[in-house]
Image 1 (cartoon, rainbow over the protein chains, first blue to last red):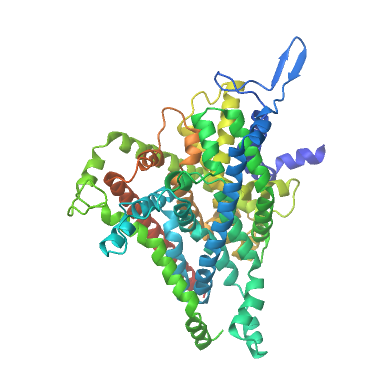
Image 2 (cartoon, rainbow over the protein chains, first blue to last red):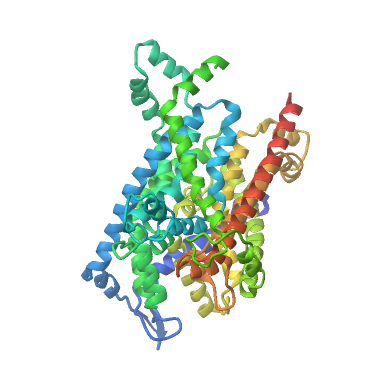
Length: 300
Length: 280
């Protein structure tokens, strides 16, 4: 008890308590509420669901409606949307990694004085608007857009190629928008790489590609994991890119959740969708967290 | 590493360098094309009808758009300020406090918003606000305040990462010297630590500001009928297709943000160089 009072007196306690309380209230508690709403019943009221807990005549009633979840299992739309999101995020992450790794590698190998400028060039687009950069692709990929116009002017095609509102456009948009987030952790990892290891490998007769494959790549594993998770996790729930660039074939869970919430006003089903998405993302988030907390805590 | 060896590896990475320059073209070309078309006089987006500023002129007469810009700027300003406060506290806790009860949960809550899909953050915060309103009557109306709370929550995570990485590389012996000489921890922090990490605090503030300015999904969930932000405006017209006035608006946004970021980068680089010179 005395130690508790002493703790309350110190600044240390309050310094921890302030951000802790904020995060508990506005980040952790909301998830509990989503879980609760996901087992409530939709209703024509404000808010559009019935209370899970009710208290009357000294009776506490808890009404758990698992119907939202069984509804999601019955309709193949939802199952396909989850699968579509995971597939899209998986392949887009690999594409981003294939493009981002050589870029991060080249920056890390560049002369010291060029590195900050190159890094700024890579990061600058991600500071400007995400929404606008996706919108820019609409004008490029559409049937009357820049690419089709160019190809037609050169006489290579007669009819425009349908690119906007296809999965192809969604892939382009994801790689484009998330590329900087892949490059940054990869660069941070590759730049710390001890160059004497590569010299040792080449002294021992390894060729450049062998040295890269057996020394550089395994040592940059943490950067690869961090970059890939920074792309994969948000892309699974992505809304803006499939909405603006995707078409009838594009089925992703972020747009389905949005439609359930804003279109159908079915908050319980939207909540159940969010809970299942969280469960799917739990392992990737933990992977990311392990890397991130290591890099946050590792002091010199 | 000696200078010649460095140059050799730079030349040797031929493939990686080609990809790097190709990647940079890929990153910038769409924005350049967008900007070029914003000066197109023709209403048809893809037909070049001559050079014109008319779409820019029309932006200035669009009152609801100007309202949305003002709303977004206010939210971004208060978000950035609150997020720097909370995020710096969190960064101090992460880098200087060692273990305490509940540290694992704390790290989890600070890193998760970096990757959590926007639709989940938006939905969960909206449900929280609705539940709070029905439990104790606040917030009665959703709008700028609820967007501010939501933005502050996810922006703090980014601020924490930026500030923590600066705090980690900081020479702690200076802080310890101040403490040894009898300064209270609070005094040592404000007189020693803050001046040194000021460039990091400024860039974290700017990052939070641009993140808040750019957010569409979270704000759409937690807003009410009275607050429309700039991204909501852009999104609702982008949904209908490409239009020249959105191109003009997009150009203004891209150029303004780029200019501010470049300026901030230049200033912080100069400050950094000065610091290094003083250190020597």
